[in-house]
Amino acid sequence: MRDTFVKTLVELAKKDKKIELITGDLGFGVLKPFWEQVPDQFTNAGIAEQNMTSVAAGMALEGKTVFTYSIGNFPTLRCLEQIRNDCAYHNANVKIVCIGGGFVYGSLGMSHHATEDLAVMRALPGVVVMAPADLVEAEECTKALASYKGTAYLRLGRGGEKRIHEKIDNFRIGKAIKVHDGKRIALFSTGAIFEEVTAAYDELRSKGFEPAVYTFPTVKPIDSETIEAVSDSFELIVTCEEHNIVGGFGSAVAEVMAENRSNKAALLRIGINDEYSVRVGNQKYLRQQYGIDSSSIVKKVMQQLEG
Image (cartoon, rainbow, N blue to C red; front, side, top):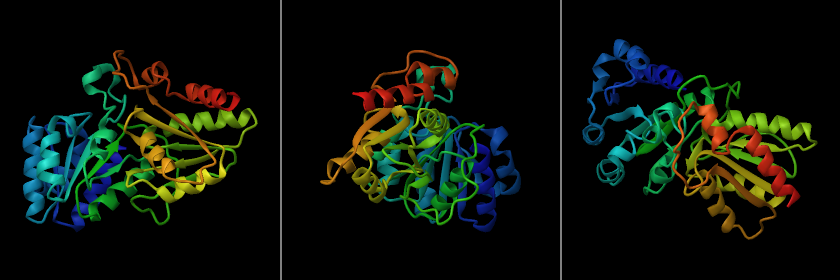
């Protein structure tokens, strides 16, 4: 995803001199095409994320479209006050980009596990929150945010994510994407956890079920229309996220369903069960340990259906 993001941003920046990219002193191997092709639109703020964010806000208030870039929790939690006070409060045209959402940097421990970011950023008034599931969604999110006026958050994986879509027609911020039609069960996901959802979908089909599948590249504003339509006609909605179960994608879906008077569907939220990840290991291992891999998804769905 990060290579797709940079490639897309380079092409956009060549056409629009107002686009700026600021890094917090990392990602140089990935960002090299940007600074080589549009060097006057690139800044290294150093290991100083609070300053990076305030500089971005100042540039945005002078008419720039600014992307800040760092890994894990560094561009969000480390500089949350600056995002809130300098960017979001002023509706500044700043796009915060996190590389390595969830357990991507699993071997580096809890400090590098971005598992509360969606909830924290979603709580800030007026901030758009996006988490693409594959390379095509990552490209479309980057394009959409480059033209969006205001503060936004883009959560990306690290690399190696599978391609889901050949193309996406009429991509819009705030709109879910249907991947499969189905009945009884609907699987909702946001971000790179979709690869686990895909495997779970295949296993559920082998058991005789036909789940519908939707990806939600936008967590905020959430696609209330799709959620309401599905909750009116399906028996079970399952939300999947590589994130704390509290406050994130599943909570956003739950909020919509709670205010929908005609719900038919029950809701099952799958995520990290409100705990810090004390284990270390690669992303696949940690997904298994915290019950968000494909086998765990299938097991929890079956338990819900049998209960």
